[in-house]
Amino acid sequence: MSSPMDKQMRVAVVLLAAGTGSRFGHSTNKVWLELDGAAVISRSLKNAVESFNDPRTILVINPLDKEIAIELLDKEVPELEIEFVDGGKTRHESEYNALEYLASAIKEGSVNVVVIHDGARPLASSELFHTVASTAHEHGGALPAIAVDQREIDIRTERKLVRVQTPQAFRGKEVLDAYLQAKRDDFVGTDTAACMERYYPQTKSVAVKGEASNIKITYAEDLHIAQTLLLG
Image (tube, helix red, strand yellow):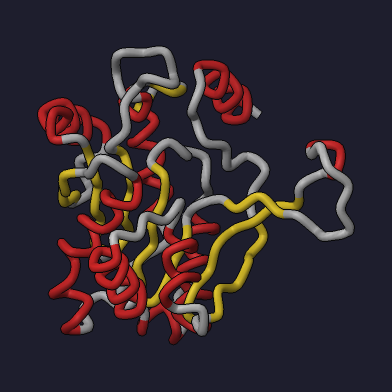
């Protein structure tokens, strides 16, 4: 059941899928590979939009992949209205291209929350997407994080370390302005939160509970791990 806040949210979901298969050891971008009967990107898209009412769905891809993207997604997720944006040379540039594409909608208010997600994270749940979006709508920004076990790091520290995931969500006008300023300064952030921290440090970015199963498929073995997680 939707809440009054849900009705006020006007969400655009941006999935980043403009990478290559170089680190995966494959000539094809990993998001087009099959994971238990469906493409990685199809699973990412379904989970990304499931909990929202009529979101804008933006897929950022390498222009060379557009033909395969249209054919595959028409077959696997025909119910989704997907808008394609050309990716850039870096993750940051791909994010900028998506926000520039959405700029008029953000400025006029038909989009007031932007959720940005790695297309290669197909197991992020629809509940996580909803949590980051609603939290960002209320507070300004949200990102999922999970605690890092001290045994995973090489140095001793008293600080509590976390591993940040996507999806990350921010109010539309603020994240658009941050990326426009970054463009003028030639600043390149590692992720959306890094750009927001630099240009909108006053924005409250709330850490929400991440998901251990929300792995990013970067190497070939990650696909096998994801398969195992899907099968329970």
